[in-house]
Length: 353
Image 1 (cartoon, helix red, strand yellow):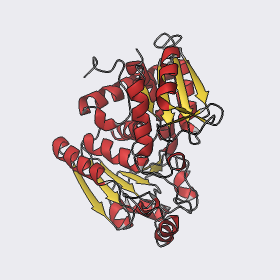
Image 2 (cartoon, helix red, strand yellow):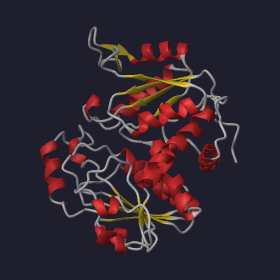
Image 3 (spheres, one colour):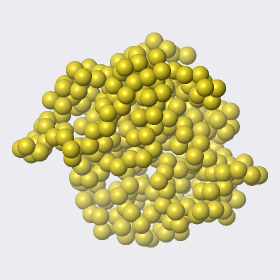
Image 4 (cartoon, one colour):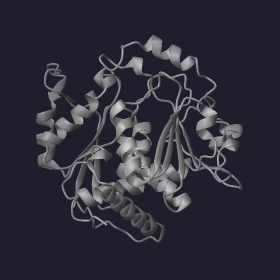
């Protein structure tokens, strides 16, 4: 258990940490979760410390789990709406009296608080793949306090932690668990890649047998795919791809169908800046929907996961989302959402010491 290497570190991507370090985070999260259930308080861990949260995109679970987590740890979270401050921008993208350079914002907040958490993807960076992650790295370059990634265009490391903690809660571990990350249809094409990419990175890192299922045109980043293969080999798990939805779900312990954007939506050189072509790819695969019949293909005690919000009636049926108890497969989405609180508290307590 690695316990000495976290203080002051940024949490921008799971790939910045070893498997042992990620397992430490999960162990701490489990302990904090148990203590909360027993009304054992931790309001001295981050007493009087401040987390600044900058949201370029909307949020329900992320904002509230970070705010609640900071309160429970004895600190306070400040919500910063970029439209109500001078919007932080990278050098060369400033607009007079509208934006403020990231280097300046980072150094000001560094003097006043103890960590900066940022969510940014999609429209704020004009769908330039990697543009948001570059912004977070620029914050980290200029701030001496930790910078936390609340989702960018490549990674959603806290959601991924909640995903794998939920798997451990339900199955007791990771070895032999068949984890299927699948695309699912949505009428909205503006869905970042971060959730599926972080999900398969964590799942392969921890040794699960991982299947990625999606139609052609929905490919994830090549470097992420290569890293998953490397993780799977090192951990003794497996990693494979299929373009058949039912084949991907068959026998799975974890069924995680979620929409993400097609490659053409991104700016060149990754994509073609073509939302129309993206929509055509989406609409050709409206049958990629998780229903009760879909779940019957999975393991008899499978769990359905989704990061939420889910597009009910498109990605998934109400029957699947709302079956949270009873015999056979179940939906674990609300356990998964709660686990956001516990994993975020774990990371903050480790890096904001």
